[in-house]
Image (tube, rainbow, N blue to C red; front, side):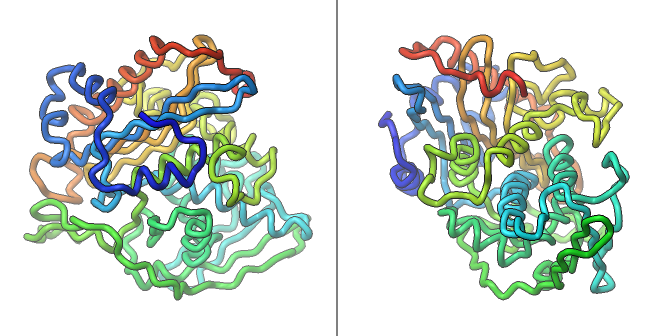
Amino acid sequence: MVRYFIIAVLFYFFSCSGTKDSRILERILLSMDKKYSSIVNNPNDYYLQIAYTQIDRNSQQEPVFTLHTFNVDNTKYFYPASTVKLPAAVLALDKLRRYESLSIDKDTKLTINSDKTWMSSMLGDSSSENGEATIAQFIKKIFVVSDNDAFNRLYEFLGQDHFNQRMWDLGYSETRMRHRLSIPLTAEQNKYTNSLSFFINDKKILEQQMQFSSLPLTVNSVKNLIGKSYMQSAKLIDAPMDFSGKNFFNISEQHLFLQQIMFPRNINSDKKLYLRAEDFDFLYEWMSKLPRESRYPFYSDYDKYPDGYCKFLMFGDSNKKIPNHIRIYNKVGMAYGFLIDNAYIVDTKNKIEFFLTASVYSNDNQILNDNQYEYNELTLPFLAELGEKVYNYELSRKRNIVPDLSRFISQ
């Protein structure tokens, strides 16, 4: 594999059609339990795509990336589900920096209005320590338990135009953010975003009016028809489900976006986010925080929210606790039979680090939106074993220079 030092080369590699699969990933997949042979032998049917980046350090502790891919096709549609929440959280902090002169930050109180009958308002947030709704609280809930309403509020703060244009300006030109999550709204309704206000000491400091998106979101994906039928309003529609109007966030751009967040000085550094060190520290804390470690918001039921609840790679198929020396900075997605994890995994004890992004799909009855998918039986265990196999490979991989992972020890 070729080693890549700049983001432009990475984008070129990812964009090339017919890229040869990594022999390392092929060997890892072939070594997996035989119960996953249907996925390994039929990756296209299971929408299997994997991007794995090895990280080595030079004498100045700067990262050197080696990319491995398997079956990556940046044009073939898969539903990104909650993985879109990572850029929403990052871009919300990015947008807030534009209001610094007004003393508005992630902890500033805000209220959200219902400007149309189908919109929902928000005057407070009972999960926060002071009962107030803030951008920070939305971000916390997004990462700890993948809260959908929290994402929708960030979507409304960003606005569809800004959300997409900012991603494109950063170099993620294939991404399309078209809708809120878990709310049955039309494409036209999703173009509207609620008005909202920020308050300091109960004084309104900023009011953002209701917005309507005029930015064309062209369909740039193929094979958008999935399944044989789907449920809609409790009725079975005898036709494939059309995903061309859904969010689109391909494996390559997910993988690179996460790398930019974790290594902002080394990845895409010519197109910087408006974030400061404290913003990155906040993201790192909550991207890796487990439900049992969170106080506001608080999730007391470990059976419902085990460590692997939002950590599919390595731990998604069990209730066991993640060792303290392993931290996973990631965002998962699960919907319509698709399962995705986009992760940076760090082991401070064994001094290893790597990026792993994977998507997989299973839907035996080929009916979409019926909540009958093989997550627990097949795809969650598959991603857990895939993560474990790559982790074990990293344990055995020789490094000339031991990485300094001290910035993660306090997380």
